Figure 1 (cartoon, one colour):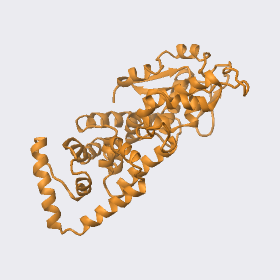
Figure 2 (cartoon, one colour):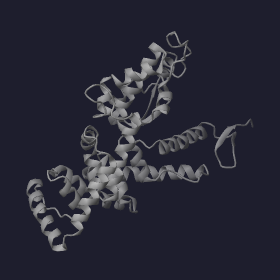
Figure 3 (cartoon, rainbow, N blue to C red):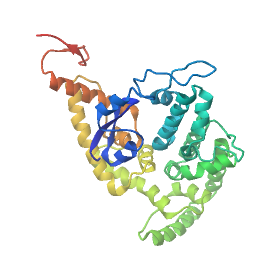
Figure 4 (cartoon, rainbow, N blue to C red):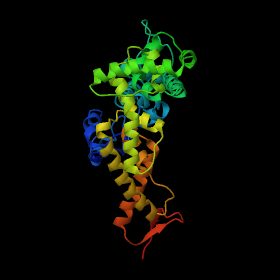
Length: 353
């Protein structure tokens, strides 16, 4: 885990804690490390403290949305693609500032360059939508669920971003995907153990040559190989890394993580070459945070796995818990005496002594 920094924006004065390695991506979307700069800009249109109104229209004068309000209205935008999704939120906010009408704000968002990056395949040639943006996310998640049901969640996480747009464009529903997987599973179930081993051996020889190292496949690789005969070596290699990365977590944390959790991390881009360092940093931080949380009489603190998930996936609940623990620790270090506490141990104010 790299150095963590807190960044702010005129419509997000609470700020985010991110890895410094991705700081430039957020700066390109208006974030800054300078809290006072964000506070000063918050009175501008689109800012948290903006008190003006949108352009007068025939429908009347409407207050402009903030970025945070649009995030609440359409949380799926940043879930699919955090960077490009934020650009869609910004486009919506600007559209509403200019017109004061939701319909025009939505149209401006859908006409932005980022829209096709967040929702590839959703728009027909005539410009109409094949489904709503919310349904797009629901269907994408449903396809991943079906992959998990057949034990190929790691494979699904690797291919979903390229596969799903083609499913949308060809009107292939999640139910149809589930049906195809079931048929393939039944066909493979009719094979003898020797027949399965022969198939896997053929692919082992091929990929060992292509990857330059010996690999071993088990029955869980059969469905991906059957439904995607052109599966490339890099995807397969990442799938095989799930077991290796799982072992690295067990060594660092002294506990096992579920295969699903490790597959999710692999799908988010975690590589075996960096996993050990990432896990160890998370274990160290979790230990420190746990000690601080206990001193605050808190019942829970983030685990090492939750910290890694927050780093790679942006878990809001864990980020909020961390922020609260750190804020209380900072308050206690500033006011060593005179802190008034609730029975839970949380600082709720100051007393005069």
